[in-house]
Image (cartoon, rainbow, N blue to C red; front, side):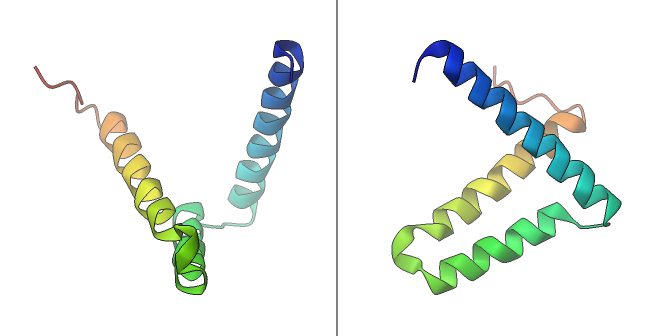
Amino acid sequence: MGSGESEHVKEEMVDIMIYLLRLADKLSIDLDQTVTDKLIKNAEKHPENGWLLHFVTWHFLILIVDTISSGVSLVIE
């Protein structure tokens, strides 16, 4: 995939993500809980596919975003 095509795909993916975030908000869907529930379900159903790693990664990312949002620096000096 060329860089121009890659950039177009990125932009389309972001458009879809924005749409889904807005839709979840309109429908009062708690995405953090919904993704957590789905990752747990996938980990139980398909343990051989590494879904537990996805679950841990998702929660680690949430922790980082929450930490940054609260104004706490993640820089270790």
